[in-house]
Image (cartoon, rainbow, N blue to C red; front, side, top):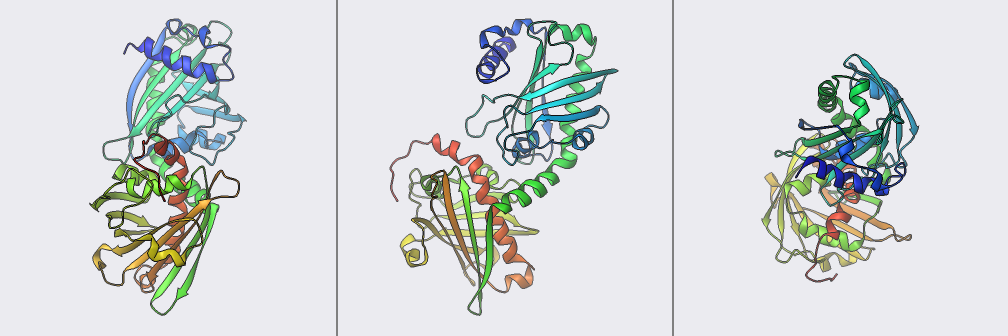
Length: 399
């Protein structure tokens, strides 16, 4: 596709919804004399980490540390409405100062409305008002669009960048476009040095774990029971009922928990997955981290009626879990039960895990890590499952 046509389509969608643009018809991409495009790979940074970062730059210290060679100053003029989210906070306004190619560039950056919103699409849309230049030409603002997705290994991100600059930019900053392109590449590469750890600490552990509670109880001599209670916004019981048979791939499994889930495969695939009743007898093999402990698990869907006397909520999944190396020896079980919350804008969920007591001997703190993990992974579902479920055409509706 011709780049002007592609940019025109993008700007038409952005402009129709962005509060700072008067009318989409006023944007003519032919007026943008400079359109910079490039592809870039970001090692070790998953798309969800980028989604979080845009809303959590927050301070001048973080902004400067992001790229010390060019970042000078940062002010958050309009904070993100919901920084503890993986949805781009449209309308966030940041005043920034950068030193690039011998020029000090002051600008106001506003997060626009993403227009790639299908399940699995990740996008940053930013309108950049260049200080002192916005009134000198029409259009006077620049636009930056990042589209990104998991790389082939699912360990990093492949990103496509488009930067459209007004004609006056070349006059005010002659010869800067190539330097600007390399500066953007440096910004993106630098994220590998700090963002994965920051995302794990601030979002996975601090934010997601705070949305529920867990407790560990003694269950006879051999077992310990981990009970996790939480509320998950944006989900419905039907979404959860469908999800169990449709995890399907390592890609989806990693989206469920970007920093702890490693791989997924069906050893016995569900017989009829495209509905809202899970398939008894389906068996999956997963590899994941529970805190510092890497485990390979076999998980088998069991008849739900066998757990009917153990649940309080209207919907549930019942399963047997085995450590792959201890298959059939001291098998464990789990129940995820849930129903619509009182406000009707999400679900309440209780997860119950029965595990052998000796796991805390060989993996100290195992039951605590299990409780934390259940909070983390279930809270992640709200950021992709609604869109994924909306794209499905179900064979039937039951349960």
